Image 1 (cartoon, one colour):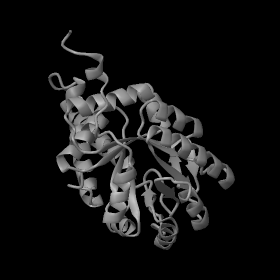
Image 2: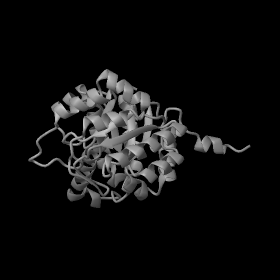
Image 3: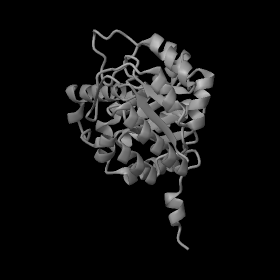
Image 4: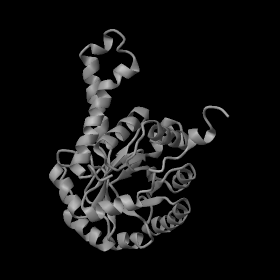
Length: 300
């Protein structure tokens, strides 16, 4: 018998779970779970360590584009489980497909994802509804959680473009009745940086949607929304907030500063571990700030 066995290498951490209870507790406790998109190993490691430090549950989100960039679903699953095991991560972690197509949700579930978002917001409501019904059925087989979208989120993410359509409460209720676990809905939020002319979140729309659905709501485009609006949204039923742009900006700004200062040309600072260090520190600080803002600290 060798030092290692296959079981040791590929074992799934017990705390890699679906988001059902996590989001339900946040909904009832009036805080929000940070959903943070990952783009590579550094991103994933930094988020996991920050969540562990703050004792916060966390959802690791991957867009289809990010999955392709990182090599594929098996690679992402292996990276996340490997890091969780090696870093002794104890907080609850969810591996979630963000803005997935109908086919992508199936592939993600088959490859170990514990949660999926089917984004049928670009389809007719009827098509979105029928596909959601199938995704919910399949997710039950894998004990995975399901997020869907009604209306559309403004901005662009991996080629999915939304005009910022406000969700219809009746349609949202029909989706909730299918047994989904949380619902993304357009309430004036957008992906990417918020423009100067942005008018803010539509709280009346959120309140109507939350009353109609009675489940945790998801705020996409959480980067850049003022803190007071974030906290008001949480009080009205937002239980999961997606963060991506804010981390990308913090990372890029820190690395640019390191390079522009001339530090990158000194000694062996071309070593990627040194070149990326300032960006990793900036991302860690950003994650800890968002956990504090969302109220998920010590909720693990």
